[in-house]
Length: 261
Image: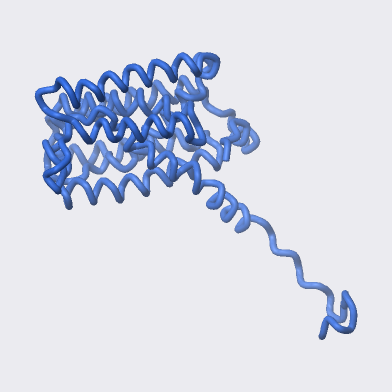
């Protein structure tokens, strides 16, 4: 389902410009990660409250489709976070928890990626943007496999997923944006020591970079779930809002006598 940018206006609120959303998200992500690099656990929890507040603020001006897509990403990403961090320890946060700002942070990442895909420059130069992502991401993935001191097979696999999403996914602009935002997020977070990826996966067979080069391809599965599931969820929500017709007057009959009482 393609998001309707006019839906928010129909509810009495003008839709926010994609560039404004992008600036707010990037400023929030950067600020939270910089503050959390040396924050105590109570401060980290306050950062979580602040991040949820920013997400709610941004979603208040979006259409129901975008809201649902974003919340689907939050649900799926949160399940993955708790599975792959505290349980499997594929990567670990400073306090070996899942910080409270991470679930809403995934929602912000989705909004930022979607906003990049909506920018006039990206829409007008989509082929160029696609080429830059493929060249940049491909070079990073190749470096991780061939030249890096720390091998990164997982990153190369995820980059392959990203290529598939870019070629056959339902929203090319979204995946172009995801590469930009997720790459920035992972590079900043690992550089600050907010989280660190293990050298190998739980099987001990797949090497992992810190961060993996194609991390955006991993995030792409959340985006795909949002794009595919949102129409059904929105349809269900709209059905709940549709008033139920009043009962037919007593004695009113339609059809033939064979239809029964």
